[in-house]
Image 1 (tube, rainbow, N blue to C red):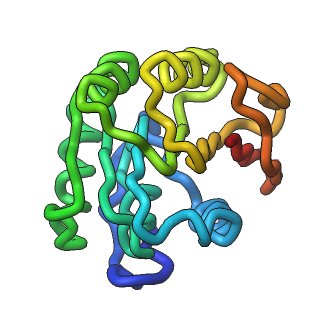
Image 2: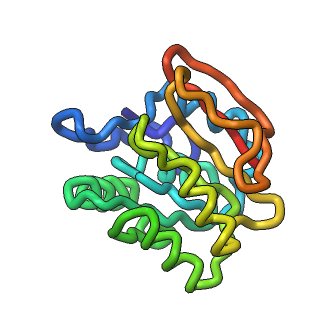
Length: 181
């Protein structure tokens, strides 16, 4: 897996060992970023359930101002830190350990407004609705912000969650991308 374009173009990211982490494929990542290209420059992003940091690092490479990387797995956090260092992106990166509920609470306590959320939780665990609920509760999404949800194509997400509505949906094989605003 590599960074597709931008400042870190061509850098190969370290990949996980085993099947606990399911990184976004290059094809799906490229599709996501062609859809949201206009939202990325200057954006504050959160790569929730970051795994390898793949999506957040691609956003930074394409001009995002800052990215918060969050995960509750020690292995993932170490992998994310190594990938950030490999891209020399420490200045624009903050790694937050913990489960998504605690991470969103901490971001709410900071009063940070987020332009782009990348949500790629473990499939079939029903975490999307809780994420949206907490993003709304802590008033985290910027006025023109978006939420990019990656999910299994056999697990469609609703047209509206917590007053966030679908702006775009695309399917790539067994993976679906739904963008809310």
